[in-house]
Image 1 (tube, rainbow, N blue to C red):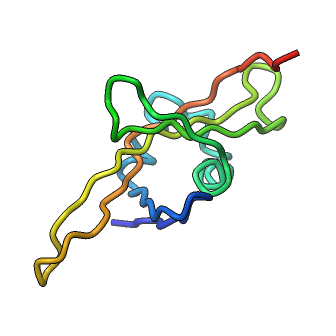
Image 2 (cartoon, rainbow, N blue to C red; image 1 turned 90 degrees about the vertical axis):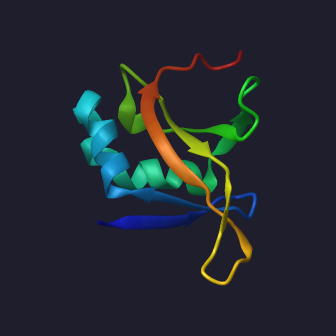
Image 3 (cartoon, rainbow, N blue to C red; image 1 turned 90 degrees about the horizontal axis):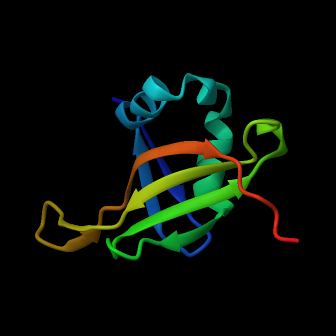
Length: 107
């Protein structure tokens, strides 16, 4: 299975699997042409921590190519720690889902 690894603007390594991308496209097939923009949302977008789930972050970035229905891509990332093969704790940060949304510009 394919896996893409991205570094976010905060220095975190995050991965997305082909299975997760297919999951996103199941309910949002219109996002298929925006794969590179979706990864760029994680790479260079801003993020907001979930108030109820502290290890969940929503990354978001504006893309005018999504207009008129939407103007932002949103990616949900879970931050976890796992043990590697030699018993060291290492980051295990991964994309769980994503979508497009229209966010009103602040004026």
